Length: 315
Length: 318
Image 1 (cartoon, helix red, strand yellow):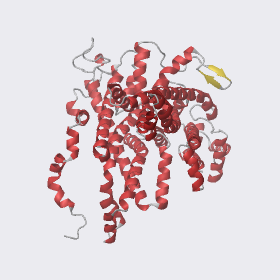
Image 2 (spheres, each protein chain N blue to C red):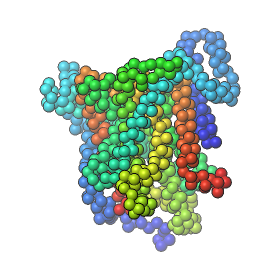
Image 3 (cartoon, rainbow over the protein chains, first blue to last red):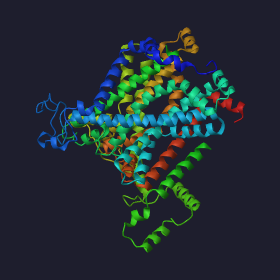
């Protein structure tokens, strides 16, 4: 047992929660009203999105419950509105509040999935670049430079466009995958650069050399020893990237090249509602917009707080 | 050097799009053309040549601005782009002027009044500006100024004057009115970016010794802030603004869609929707050309502005 280079796992498991609540992070969270507010808002949005079937007052996709007589009703507190539909209805008589919840689910799903994917790609390539050095490093970093010089929305549009052209009559799930892939491919650069930087620092530390001396393989060193030590900044980045991925998805959907119209995300709802702006039915487009901003803002605030809390230099 | 590599890579991607995405012959002739017709067109389009020859031909044509016919509109891509380019350029420039003209002073104010309510308000607003997607800002502006107040028009370019192949909306009141909302929409993101950057740089500079020395010499606040501090904060600001100019043109895609502004972005988004490869390829090449030249220009400008780089360059033997 004494030769085990990594004895922490046995000791850590039972007291992890205890350590968390005693730690700096929890203290910093409790003393930051902004972080508490943001996390509560984000949590409410996530719960509404995940449990939309149970929370939503209506099912916007169940055609049998739709009544065309109820179409384009304003929010409940405005004259002509009905208490049945709190935020009003759209042109097909769907309850906007319910459509929001279902839409947020798709937005969050695409956002989280693409962040996860870009994190996998970015962390993997970053570790490789930082660890291997030399030509591999040069190649990966030059690719990053080129990717960074183009705005992400343009890259995402392009990949999405190519995907569309390649599979013109794509199945719905495929359209989703192309979209997630497009957003993920624009986001990985940030992770790769961050991870590469910290990997290069960690690589020369004693514990890595010790591991190497006792004959641990390079792959095992990379993932078992270096990876846990470079994950801090990645976490912060991932939080902020969730917000930007959700916004990118909404933008693509708004431009009409995002999720398939049969499963509307917040961006799709905004695009559809945009057509009714001029006839005075602002609520069809403003509510999804407000929801989108609420999610993005709260996630951004959380990310800001996390960055400050995890960065000892700023204290 | 790197610029050339990037351009060639982009050209290659565009070329691969042409080659492997969709069949232009089927697209042009339809499903029920005879094999002879197909063969003839294939030959006319040069599709029977070998791969390197086709790529060389593609690059040669691209350098001359020739990208073939739009699959959707059946017109030459180069004419389409030339038609649309002035609108996008005008919009981006107007947005850049607004972003710089408001962003720098607001950033200075936020830095000088650090900790006060006005600065806090500005920083919170700027966070909102980052979190608000461009298209939502556009929709909100349309709702307020076009639908409710009915002050400004919400789509198109309005009255434009033509000088040869160049069209401009800057010279008529109607054109300017049409420009205002899209330009403001496009500038918001850059504005917040510039403001935050100026504030951060300004705070950094205000801590340095030479500012303290300038104060010790008894210079007025105005001379210290604007004569000494601001000037030194502007170098990075110039760089970032230059680099952001390209993304202004790219983000114009969204603004142009919201306001139905007849620029290149609208052309591109329609091309993506209908998988119109020649237009996509041409737009891609043009945009990357603009990006690469801006990057190059900023590098040179930096070299000219910052004397330290020149000295290092000589010592290092670049």
